[in-house]
Every structure is written in C-alpha cells, then in structure tokens.
Length: 282
Image 1 (cartoon, helix red, strand yellow):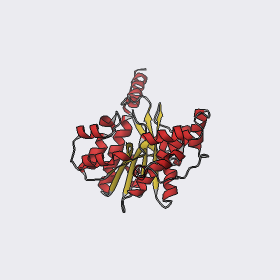
Image 2 (tube, rainbow, N blue to C red; image 1 turned 90 degrees about the vertical axis):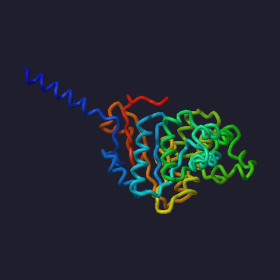
Image 3 (tube, rainbow, N blue to C red; image 1 turned 120 degrees about the vertical axis):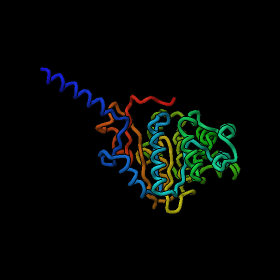
Image 4 (cartoon, rainbow, N blue to C red; image 1 turned 60 degrees about the vertical axis):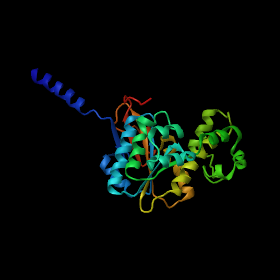
C-alpha cells in the first residue's frame, strides 16, 4: 500500500513537472521543436507569424525566433501589421536613433500594447540595424472602404495611394475567410466589410514584396486571421509574386497543448498551440 501511495504521488509530481506553455506542430500535425522549425524557416523568403495580439507567449516566441533567424542569416527585414504605412518616416527616425521612444509614441499611432508586446521587436531591429517596415494601410482608408466602397479610393491623391496596395487590387470574395466575414455580418455592409479586410491584406503583401531582402527573409508579424488557412496576406503574396517561398505560423489555444486538436490542425505550415490558461497582456 505504501508503495502504491508513493507511486501515485510520483506520477502526480511528474505530470506537474511536465507543464508546458506551448507546443509547435508541423503541417502534418506532428510535434516539432523550436530549433527544428527555425532550421526549416531558414529556407523561406517570407515568414508570416500569425499571432494572438494579447498573448505573451506569441510575443516571446516572435522575439526568440527573430533572434534565432538573425543568428543564422543576418539579412533580415522585419515588418508588422501593427504599424501603418503613413508612419514609416517616424518609425525610420526611431530606428536611426534620431528620435527617442517618447517621441515615437507622440508622432506615430502605436497600439496600446506596443510597450509590452512590440517594442522589443522594434528595438531588436534598431540595435541590429535592420529595416522595420510599416506594412498596414492607414486605418482611416480601410474604414473608408467599409463605409463608401473600394471605388471611393480612386479619388485620393497619389501621395495617399502610395500608402496602400496599387489600385485596383485583386479580390476574391469566394475565399472562405472573406465569406465567413460576410456571414458574420449577416449581409450588413455588403461586400464592403470583407473588402475592408482585403485592402489591409493586399497592402501588407504589397509592402512585403516591395521590401524583400536579397537572399534573406522578410519576417512579418500579423494577427492570425490575416494569414490563417494560407489566405489573406499569403493569398496576395501569391498574386504579386507567385515564386516566393512563404511559410506561415498559426496560433491556437487549447486546454492542453498536446495532442493537437483536429479543429486546430492544417491552418498553416506550423501551428503554435498555447495553453489556454496563459494570462493575456490586455
């Protein structure tokens, strides 16, 4: 009996020691290590890291993956959904150390969680003299598409159009992601709602292609829905430069990080599963 009690306590202790905050899976749903994934990503031209904006494990792994890829290939360009194209000048000034963090916060439209979740990546670029590209369309023009339609963009000045994908941009409303958005809105806003999403996806892809490093990797950080199921940014990258080797990471939450739930499988080249109990940054 004493042996049985000791065995049970030992089993519980071992399970407690095996607590994992995350697990990575490959495209086939097999567990893969961070080092193995990093090695495979060295062959990519573009890496789309689909994050959950408020998840600290995402942001920690984004930093660690960026640092690891920099060690193996210092020819990197970083870019993010969280910065809009009309703030590129301000971002460049910070990267060149011409303004400080306080001035950047004053001059640019930074997300509320910038300090906790994105500043580390920007500072990594700054400290290692890497470009950091503001890839997203200014939000007021995505809002304009939703309210007035894509055609309303035609009246904008050329200087403003330079902050977005070339017009007219390709659009496929039959893509599952955009169809799901239509269904979610139950027809309100018509096709303008998914097209407002599409102008973001197209613009991010446009600026990625525009700033591709030669013999290097463009690492892009974006919300998971912008690249999940190989749609969104990924679809536009194929439209603009179909010979690119693009790799995607999708982030999913589970109560247990292993095994991979079938509903979370197959959305990307790599699936990052994070314990659903993980605290959030907001």
